[in-house]
Structures are given as C-alpha cells and as structure tokens.
Image (cartoon, rainbow, N blue to C red; front, side):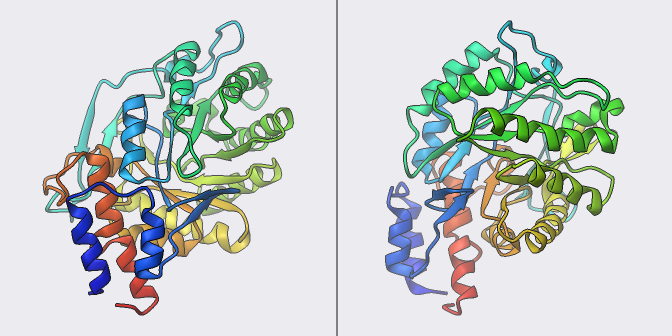
Length: 358
C-alpha cells in the first residue's frame, strides 16, 4: 500500500473533500486526475448522472461540496412555445422503486435500481426556474449539464422541431451550453418506434438540428442499449458523428420488458465496456462519457482505460446498501470517498498501481 495515499485517505475520512483536491493529489501522489467533457476541462472524472439525485438545488449543492466535477440535471420533457408536449407520458412519477442485487453480490455492496418512473415531472416553466437556480452555482471547477427529451417521430412522421428548439432556447437563455439528449430506456415501451431506420433517424437529425440553430453548444446523445447487436450500437454512434454531435454517453441501462424497468449493474458495465472500446478504437478523438455499474475505483479505471473521458454515477448514490460505507457523512461524500480514496480499490490506488507506485 502506498503510504502517502494511506495518509491522505485517513485524513479525508473524517473531513470534507477540499476544493483543491485534484491539486493535493497532484502534489502528494504525483497523479493528474483532471479529465474532460468534450472541450470542457474537469477537475476529476466523476459526474453525477441525471436522475433522482439531481432534481433539487439542495442536491446540486451537496454534489458540489462532495467533490464531484459536475452533474447532469434530471432530464426535462420538451415543450413548444404554446406548452404542447408530445412526450408528456414520460413526465411521470414512479409507482415502484426498489433496489436489487446481482446474484454474486452476497453482501449487497452493488445496488441496482429498478423503477418505472420517467423524466422530470415539472412543466417547462417550473423546470427552468429550477435550472436557473442551479446555474448560479456553476463554476470553472463544477459544470452543470442540461438534459432533454423531445418529440421522437416514426420514420414517415415529420420531426416537431419546435419542441426541441424552444426548450433548448429556454435552457440556453438560462446559461446552459452543454446538452445531453436523453434517448431513455423507457422508449422501449413504444414498440412501434423501435425499428432501426427510425432510431438512426433520431440520432442523425436531432443533434444536427440543435447545433445548426445554436452554434456554440455541445451536444451529447445518450446511446440506447438495444437488442440489435454491437454493430447497430455502432451505427447509432456513427449517426451521431455524422450529425455533428460532440460526443456520446455510453450507455443507457438495459430495458427489461418483463419487469417494466431498466437494469444496470455488472451486466451493464460489461456491455458498455465493449461498446466504449470499439468506439474509441474507431474514433479515438471522439468524446465518450461512460455510465453504468460503477461501484469501485477499479470500475472507473476500466472505463477510462477503455477510452472514456469521464464517468457518470447514479445507482451507487441511490441504492440501498447492506454493507455501510466507511465515511460517516451524506451519501454523495461517502460515494466520492469510496470511489476515489479507498486505499485498496479506489481510483487513486488503481492509478498508482498502473504507474507501478504500489
């Protein structure tokens, strides 16, 4: 074990993560943990993914205090200027939320969330009030990313650009310049839309439309996990590249119709690693934000070494743990500490091992 890491880990077990944590790591351990989200520099690779942990200002402030490099706001369902909302069925509360575990997770350390909820339940005016309040806490060392879902047409149907562009403009006017497109797992509920031509059309047309209207924004579509094989996963990425997207998020959870929920955990991480390696090999300069099944620093390192620029966390923050985490503070700080500073299997320990310093 590296003595300097052990000392730093012990010191921060009982105190807040300092704002200059990445500088301390550089000075004391000789590790550069800065990362990127497209053209945006991050102080470290850890972001909180969009979901129930990014729906309030109080959560955003806790995420910032805990040491994360940023977060993605829970996705808004787009409206046009008259309040019309074609995807309103996804503006819904869950009727069930439960934590499950993989069979080999006997100690309940790797929680997986099953739920049937949708995107943010607020209308666009209410959501923009929230987004404005969050934006005030954006800083060079803490980025806040917008996320939205708008009209998704069948192959022959015209795209309702007004929904996408009006909602993007509202968030743009609030200050946002980074946008994720949330092609969420629950789209699998609409089987009539789940044909390959239709899906590739979305990935081709929507990023192009947004970037044509707003020249200085960064757009990152989420890649859906579908049952059409790795080749089709690559086609979605290729469509995004041709559309001028600045990168992709790989990838949404795996929707399981039998339980009416998406699934994550080890299965998702293994699938996403295969995709990331393939995308990075074919497009080494294309931005990849990785998400799915991250509970250990070694999981983070696997994604980074596969070609991801950064890591998004959600289930580890939301799920019930049977085995308590070591740091006795709020869940955001506990998870950041576990992922980064665990002296045996944290991200820093993994980097030190890679460089032969342990």
